[in-house]
Length: 346
Ligand code: DOR
Ligand code: ZN
Image 1 (cartoon, rainbow, N blue to C red):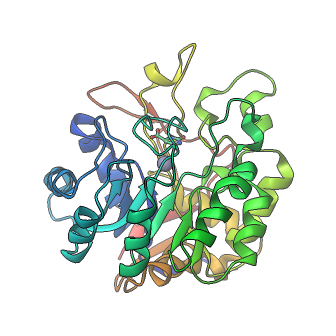
Image 2: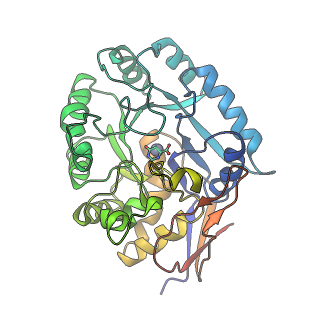
Image 3: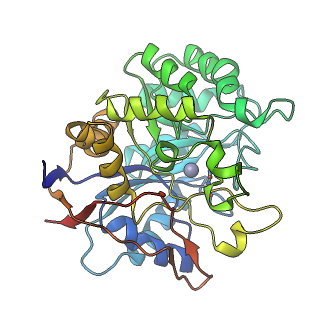
C-alpha cells in the first residue's frame, strides 16, 4: 500500500479570495498548499480594467504570510464595455492570465456580466489572436430554464456558437457539473479545457436537499444528480489532460450562508488536497492525482509546471469545521468521510 505520495506542487485554476479582512483570513489556507491560483475577479466592484487587476494583485501579495512564495494569476472581468486594447496591454505586461466571462446575473456579483455577445466579439477576437484564455461560468440565466438544466443549455445556446464564432480562442469551461459538459469537452480539440471542483466530486443534489436543506453544500453551478457526479469523477481521475483542478473555493460567512436567501459557495481551500487524495484512492487512480492537480492546468495555460513538491502521507488528517475571520466564521466544506491523507510542504 502506498504510504507517501510526492506530487509536483499543485495549482488552483479557479479561486475566490475576496478582499480586505476576508482575503487576509482565507489566503494562507490556499498558499499553504498551492503554488499559484487563478484569482476570480467578482469583487464589488468587479476587477474590470488592467489597473484594477494590478491593484488587487498588490493587495493579495501584501496579505500573504511572511515568506510565502504563492503567485496569484490575475483575471479581468469581461463586461460589454471591456476594451480590447486594455486587455491586450494587461496580457502583454504579464499582469493577467485569463479573462472571465459571467453571463449577467448568473451568480454572486455577476450583474456587470455579458448579455449581448455581439458586444464582446472584438475582445474575444483579440484574445484569440494573442492566445489569452477565456474562463467561463457556463450557465444560462433564462428564468424559463430549470436551474438543473442551465449548464447543458448553456453549452448548446452559448458555448458551442461562441467557440465556432471565435475559432482559435482558448476556452476553459469552469466548475463543470454535468456529464453533458464532460462529453462536450471530450469531443472538442485542445483549445477547450475544463476545471472540476473538489466539492462536485463529493456531493450530488441529494446532499443539499434530502433530509433537510444544507446551505453549506449550496454553490453555483448547483450540484446535479448522482450520474453527473460519477461522470465528473471519471473525468477527473482519468488523467485526461483537458480536465484539471479549479476548486472554486468561495468563502462566505456563516451569517451570509444561513439566510432565507443564502449565498452560493463552498469553502474548500484548507482540505481540498486531502479530499482529492481520498477520492483518487477510492477510484484506484492515485497515479493520476498529480496530472489533475499539478500538470494538466499548466499545460493548458502554457505555463511551466512547479519545481517544488507537496507530500501526502497516509495518516489521519484533521481540519477545523470552520475558520474564524474578522467578518465572522466561515464553514470549511465537510466531505462526510474520514480523511486518511495529510499534506506537508517539502
Ligand atoms: O458557488 C459559487 N460561489 N459559484 C460562483 O460562481 C461564485 C462563487 C462566489 O463568488 O461566491
Ligand atoms: Zn467561482
